[in-house]
Amino acid sequence: KIGATIVAVFAVALSALHWDTLKSLFDREKFRKAIIQRLNKIASKGNLGLLIYTSGFIFWEACGLTTAPVETAASMAFGYWRGLLGSFLGKSLGAILAFALGRTLLSDIASKKMEESKHFGLIEREVASNPMRSALIMRYSPFPELIKNFALSITRPVTYPMFVAAIFVHGLPFSMLWAWLGNDSSLRLRAAEAGETMAANVILNGLLVFVTVFGFVISPAVTGWWLRDLSRVEN
Image 1 (tube, rainbow, N blue to C red):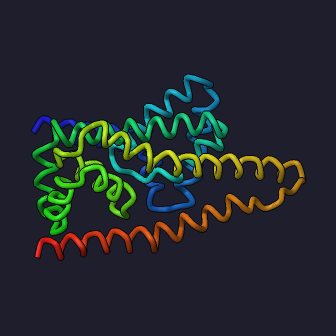
Image 2: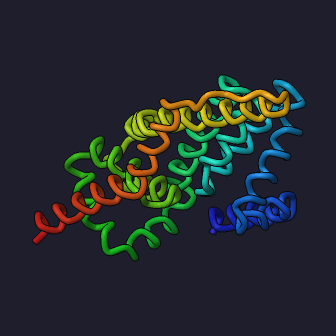
């Protein structure tokens, strides 16, 4: 009950303070513009702004909201290194916060929700035998971020150090990519304003294509094969 109350209060407060931004979630272009505008205001505050962004991103990740466009916009506002620092630190601490809540205050709610999934029983038994491998597969799976954090939180064999290692291995490369994309986009916008053009970033474009293929094809396929193998073992 205490955990549910905390989540409800946080949701109401977030809705009241950032209603315009939340409404923009239903329109990708408005969402991007709203995030960039808000982050530019925060970035103008210097180090305090970076701290505000990082703190806000902790709760953003803990709520399981999409992170890639925010991380990209952050690097457009803060620059590559500062944007990467704020995004990765905020995203990692947010995932750890969700994991801790799922293991303590929200454990009953998380357990009930996970038990509704026909796959969770298979995953739970696999985690018991291969916790680190299972944690990595879950982090790279196409499951929503909220499911990744809370599902692992109620599987006791996955310890805090294992979870931190999994989010580091999975999260850092993606944060670096989104920071690079945001910084590159910022440089191109400035060049366009000055009437200049920049050559295509072949490496960045190639990585973006790979991530797209990975997200829509490879990750779902690997996760599907993993679950199918677990079902065969169970049978």
